[in-house]
Length: 75
Image 1 (cartoon, rainbow, N blue to C red):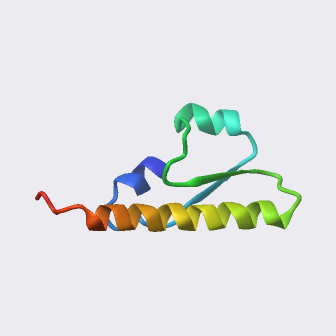
Image 2: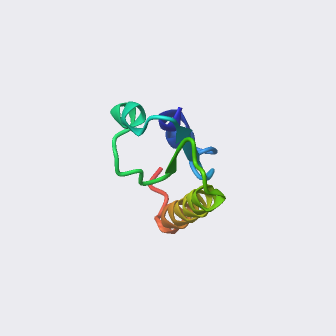
């Protein structure tokens, strides 16, 4: 799913937080580093963990948008 979102021109700037009970299972399909999205392992017991993951995903999406916007269009 993350690969589809990453490849889609309109969805690639949507902040994404992936939540899974097993990080190993997820990492096998999407290796680290998670450059454009954030991972949060379930169950999370402190709301601050989820809040930090959302903030990080927002920052990554914004950074990606600004990087791609500043590059000249080669098409």
